[in-house]
Structure formats: C-alpha cells, structure tokens
Amino acid sequence: MTRVVMVALDGLRPDMVDAAATPYLFALANEGTRFANARSVFPSETRVATPSLITGCRPGGHGMVANTVFDASVAPDRLLRTKLVEDVLALANGAESPLQRPSLAERLAPAGKTFALVSAGTAGAARLLHPAAERLASFRWNVEDTEGATATEVREALGATPEAAVPNIPRVDFAGRVLLDHVLPKHRPDVALLWLSEPDISFHWGGLRAEHTQRALRAADAVLGRIRAWRDAQPDAAEIAIVVLSDHGHVTGRGKRCLRTELQRAGFRAGTGMAPDVDVVVAPAAAPGLWFRDRALAPQIADFLATQDWAGPLLARDPAILADGRALPLSLLGSGHARSADLVATFAGHEEPDEWGLPGHAPFDAPDVPEGGGMHGGLHRAELATVLVMQGGPVRRGAVAEEPADLTDIVPTVLHMLGLAPEGMEGRPLRAALDATADAPPARETIELPGGFMLEAMRAPSGRLYPTALRKVR
Image 1 (cartoon, helix red, strand yellow):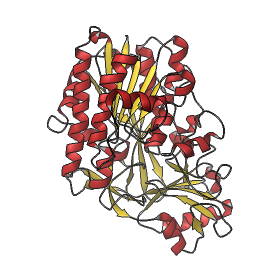
Image 2 (cartoon, rainbow, N blue to C red; image 1 turned 180 degrees about the vertical axis):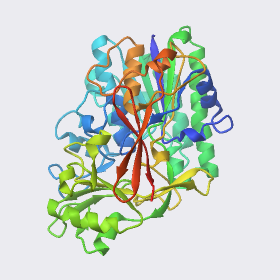
Image 3 (cartoon, rainbow, N blue to C red; image 1 turned 90 degrees about the vertical axis):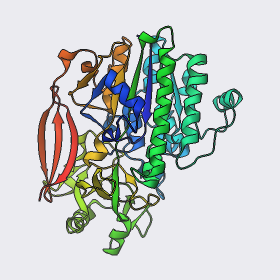
C-alpha cells in the first residue's frame, strides 16, 4: 500500500445509496467491499463521531461526549458548542487538544508518513480531526478558514472559498478541488481525508428527500466520482485505496420540543448555564444532556420524564444517580467519561415510514432545525446506521462484509493496510475487507430497558458491543 484517500459524506443514510441518487458510490460499493453492519457511536453527533473516527476510540476514551456540552470548570455560565474552534480550545484547557487519545496524524508521523485534511464541515470539527496539524507541520484546511498559512496557500492556488449556502454545493465542490487540484498533487499525503458537509446540511434544513437535498447528494457523489477518476489515472493506482464513510445517519424529526422548556413548565429550574436560579443545565440535542447542581434532583426529573409519551429511556454517567435499573450506564455504549452529562435523555422514536417514504421518525430538541428536518444524535436505527465502503489496493472486490463495524474500526484498518499497528486503539482492523475467511456475521442480542424499550445490539467475537437500534416494544 502506498496511499489511502478517505471521503466522508456527512450524515448519509446507507439506505439512500443507489444507482440513481449516488451512481459513483454505488459503483464503488459494488466493486469493492461494503460493510452491511456499519454503525456510528453514541451520541451519533458529528463532533463525537469525528474524534471517534480519527482516534479509533469511542467517546469514553477520547473525551468528546457531545456536540454541545457543559463543563463548569471551563465555562460555568454557558454551554460549549464544539463547532466553534474557541470552544474546542476552551475544553482543551491549555492543551493542544481536548482529545485524550492520539489522532491518526500523530500515529502516522513516527513512521514517516503524512496526513492531510480538507474539510467542508465546521471549523471545530476540522480541529478535532487534525488537532496536531501545526505541531506536525501538516495540512489542515477548512472552508471556514480565512487566516493563516494554509488559508493563504489555498486562496493563492484556487481563489476565494465560496460562501456557505443551502444546499452547500459550492463549498462541497470547492473542497473537492482543494483535494484534487492542490493537496494530492502538491503534498502527496500518505493518507488524505476529505470531509463533505452534504448531505447533512440539506437533510437538516430541507428534509431527507427534498429536491435540493437530492441535488446536494448528487453533488457530493460527483466529487467522489472525480476522486475515483484521479486515482485510476495515477501510475500507482493499484496501490491507492479509497474509503468512503458517513459519520451517522439521519431520522426525520417529528415532534420538535425543547426539553429545557418542558422541565421549566413542570416546575424545575432548568437553564443553559449554572446560575443561582438554575438547578439543572440542559444541552439541546437528539439525546439531550442534563447536569445537576445536586444529584438528589435526578429522581424527580426521571419521574417526570417517565410520564411523557415522547421521552425514551435515560442513560447515566453514574447509574447510581437513580434507583437500580432506571438508567442504562453510558459506559455500556462506550460513552461514559468525566465530561459526560449526569443524565442523558432520549426520545421515543418510531420505525414507520416518514413523509418521504423512508423508515423512521423521532422527536428532537434542536433550536435551529425545523420540524420535518433531518436529525441525528440518538439511538434510532436510522441515526446509527452508516455507510462504509472500501475499494482498491488490497481490498476484496465485489464483497459484502457482515462483521460488525463502527467508526472506531476504520482508522485501525487504514493503519493495518499501511503496515502499521493500531496499538492503544479500541477499534480493530476490519480484516473482512481483505480476507473473506475473516468475515463472520455478528451475534445479535437485546437489552431490556425501562419504560417498555429495547436496545438491539450486535456482539463481535471479541465481545465488543455495537448498538444497533432503540425501539419501543410496549
């Protein structure tokens, strides 16, 4: 192996990949290895998924536990939004990064190999994907960058970055140009990652099969087609693998509500930062986090939520905050960390088709996502299912791998293909991509949860649990 090009299509549901909507990805999947049981992490949010991908560890290992978090030691009066670089750096508290595990670039560097990131996502996500770029003198560029040497380098080579839009097609196309016309020929990284913000943006703001969403998906797929054409034209094409992934899926949001407001109506003093008149801080999300001034309040809020038909099971950093059996430990999902909320709420979703004919809809708490927009972050089947396709180099041709996989297994596989050991990672190389005899379907199991819910999961031969779906059974 000489090189790997990774392409992330933010938010893409695997059941939306077909010959009409995504012809280049569809062809790549048929020619390479497609992972039928690929999953996200929990919570299934981008700035939790990105560090899980790049460190090969789940949130409990790397420490980024939500898109929006509360940390009283850093900002006691407000929530921290990790899409902002300044809030990512605040969480780092003077360190280079808030991540508590090394990134892909840091693992490649001692072997003399390089990593480059081109991102059409948020600046905060780009920082989490490549936190050591300055120290390693390697390439990290994001569409929001306006200052610094890399921004200048790209501007001088290709012109100004287009303005953000919905759909975000101009920026997706431009990011593709940065990779293909500048980074790959000039920097020649051993591993490159292109992060495309579509179809996620259009899913959120228009719905899963809105007309502009379909245009955005075709545009992202067209960038992948250009990458495939570039690879096939290289003299070492046979040694270049392409890995295509999504960080999470999407479920149609139906039943928008604000958990903080619901708690206030019920008489609880809820807010977005700890203050004299606030007893519980609530971070909006598809799986909202709750941090308590006094843990003794937790049972009262749990009792209230148990009476709401829109509320799902609770998860806890320390399950002892509630009576036995009332909360699932976050550690079971690999998501328990000192930064985690005291309680994480979920919403009661359904698997019936939405207005687009796609299975799945769920309530959600997101101030700027409209009713009917796509949503993610929770444990719905459609949120957890992800795209994972590998093609080229040593990858098997025309294969469908059944072994369970999640985001933390991708970088260990890339390192393995490059002849490097993924030591210290929670994820493991997906050998089914390379060897048919290494593939095995997962053991299926269910975990009964309070309130008539069930968590479906897969178990790998190693014993590792892969959550698949939260569903209501009664």
